[in-house]
Length: 97
Image 1 (tube, rainbow, N blue to C red):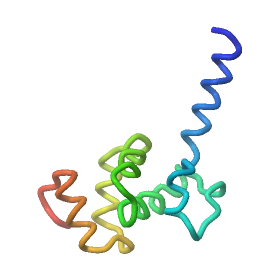
Image 2: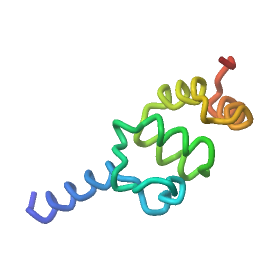
Image 3: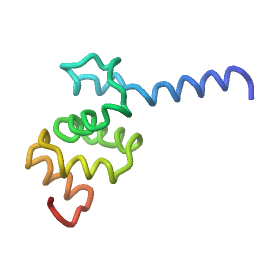
Image 4: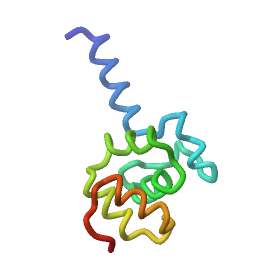
């Protein structure tokens, strides 16, 4: 492996820890550079499920296990009932919590 390939892989891995620019509008009230995708997972998932589109949901599914996304959907007080119902159907949840 050449140094260029290693540097490219490192840059790709770093980008996976950041909120992509196209989703920054979902976090209008926060400096997205300060959001840690691991520490702030609940916040990120709640925002995406409440106001994000399908492309944003696909993005969080690449970052977080579906089980965690469903758990947050079911327990969050920040996601509307309408959105919860939609995502429960989308993810094929059998019960509403």
